[in-house]
Length: 243
Image 1 (cartoon, rainbow, N blue to C red):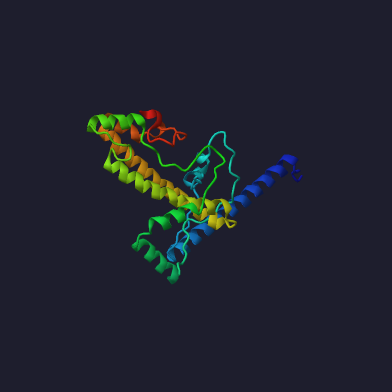
Image 2 (image 1 turned 60 degrees about the horizontal axis):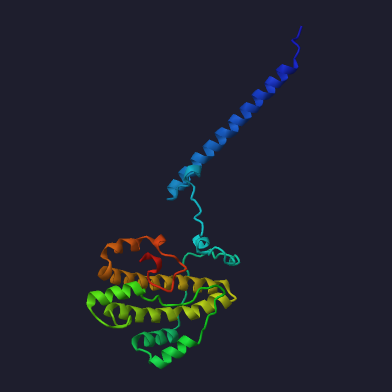
């Protein structure tokens, strides 16, 4: 008598057929991958499969660190997917720039340019040039045995502070563009310029701090490397609570 086919045998045969089909499909994919790799290698390009352990990690924008506790957050703006922005400068503009950097402005003209843009901050922040602390000033007078004003007690301090005033004026029109420009590209360019300005402005502050501490408290110079020693809200003075 012919052997009857049970339900379990049917399921077993079905599973075998399925496994064989999957195995064939896997071999086809593997064969295709090897063929594709050989073709790419001949063309000078080798596409390797993505390794989840070596995926490129998205680096978050650190602009969030710039937020001040208690202050209203700036509305999120769409980010530009641009690492480098190339652009052309006309011949006319190039000639003007060359003229401006080759000859100094008269003080009266520089003052008019400075007064054209007057930012009004919604917080307690102001655009100020840090002043020498009274304790440092008194120490300098003792060391140098001089009776002089803060502006004249030290030559390096006087020269760098005067330079810092000029650098301070640069940011005013940049802030105007950043806050009022309608195009995202213009706001982004202004923001980059402001960050570069801040870097140069801080370099002046750091130079002045080093110069004064080396004369008054040499052992304190190492403390300048620790940013947490300075309170961002004490921007009016060079040292604040540090000394």
